[in-house]
Length: 293
Image 1: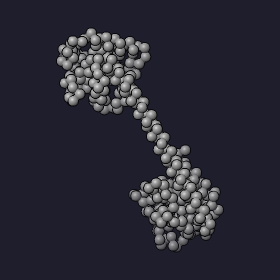
Image 2 (image 1 turned 120 degrees about the vertical axis):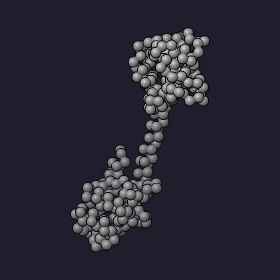
Image 3 (image 1 turned 90 degrees about the vertical axis):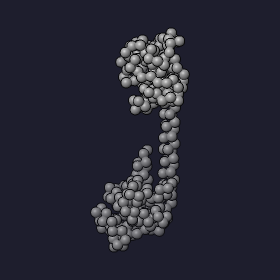
Image 4 (image 1 turned 180 degrees about the horizontal axis):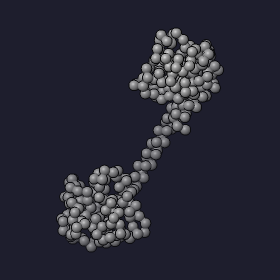
């Protein structure tokens, strides 16, 4: 259940709980540039609550500020005290009527639960006491719902982070196997590549894993690993390790974690490029080119 749906249900239950109530609205926070969460049982109430949210003036804001239940009637007193609210009440078709507003505190947000009736003197002292109790229960319900939602969001974030870490580790393994480099070098390569392409590291890692997944992918990794081993003893830090046009275009960099790569691939990239591009592993040339370009 969404937060707005929950507030809507709470309004409906309040109307059922308090005799004389015809419509209800819940507002969380008044003023602050007109920001606030609102739910109503009737569209006409939305304009009344909106006027109170924008101006921070009306029985709802008074109840929120004073932490007291406010009971009264629409009439000349409202016109004099809250002219903006009086205009909204008139536009909503309330020539007369009553209001009953109880404070609502949810964390740092101060709001109110507001009941309305088109009948004068519709609410009693008992109704006021009942609404105060109901408002405290509503506040607890909203806090529990908010805490539960935050807990679910945090859990979802942790799961996503774990999944991202897993896919990044797989991509590191692929780069290590195909390029014959260390874990740190493989990670540096992925980071620089993601920055150059302006995409998230997890997305780049997934693309690389997808390109080399399956049985054919395993064969490709083995093939490029064997190729890398066959090149041992040949310097990979010079252009001689990139003899053809494909790898010669890949810029080099100093072979150090503390050195800033001068291009996307660097030394690690040369090895991966030689293995996957020049050896034609899995015929992935076009896909890998798209991944690194």
